[in-house]
Amino acid sequence: VIAIDGPSGAGKSTAARGLARELGFGYVDTGALYRSVAWLATRGGVDWSDGPALAALAGSRRFEFDPEGRLRIDGEPVDDRIRTPEISRGASVVARHPEVRRALLAIQRELGRQGGVVLEGRDIGTVVFPDAEVKFFLVASVRERARRRYAELRARGDEISFEQVEREQVERDRADRERAVSPLVQADDAEEIDCDGLDAGEVIELMKSRVAARFPLTWDTKNTK
Ligand code: DC
Image 1 (tube, rainbow, N blue to C red):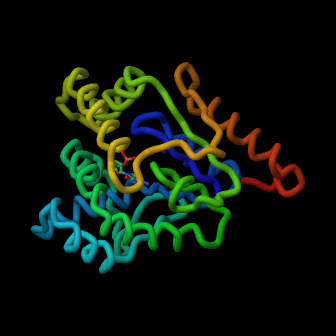
Image 2: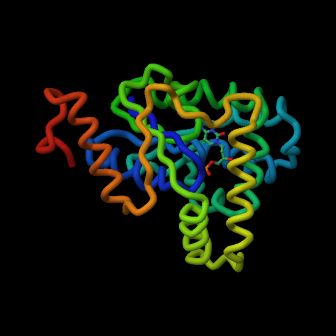
């Protein structure tokens, strides 16, 4: 199990997906699960403040990631519907509820149970898989992270301003770090990677070299896709 944690916008998803592809591992984007709970709640008329109802909603669905790392709920792809600014806000609200975290904890452990998987989120190395064989904590400056998120949202046609993206980034960081249950903290045994000034390919290479150093006999580039 490879755990990748860090604040929003540090480049975790691209790096985690790329590393998984290089190693021939599965990829689990745990943020997509929290986003899905917020999205399902909006569709089903469940309030983001109702922890027990949200947990029941999460528990009643089947979550799986296809080989490309795309989330399906009950077999249906969710796509970019969970990537809007509204659902970003909702995800950070629903992620505060202990009931929701408990429901998603079981699902995440099940998804990683067989190993050969890269899981990416906020509390993978601390709570979900504290015994993960390899842990990374990706960081980047607020400005750099806001710049990436802004480019992403604009490319999708969102009319959001850079200032608003930056403001929301700071707010989301605060919510993630100050949350009472499973706040975003770096695991003692996680290696920190500062992604400022590194492109995704460089981050992936760095992580790959760390994995190879830890598992020199079991890891062979020729056997990967
Ligand atoms: O990584 P992301 O932006 O898709 O995450 C969406 C929200 O879910 C974010 O507010 C933090 C929360 N989250 C969490 O609390 N724990 C995780 N393991 C992953 C995401």
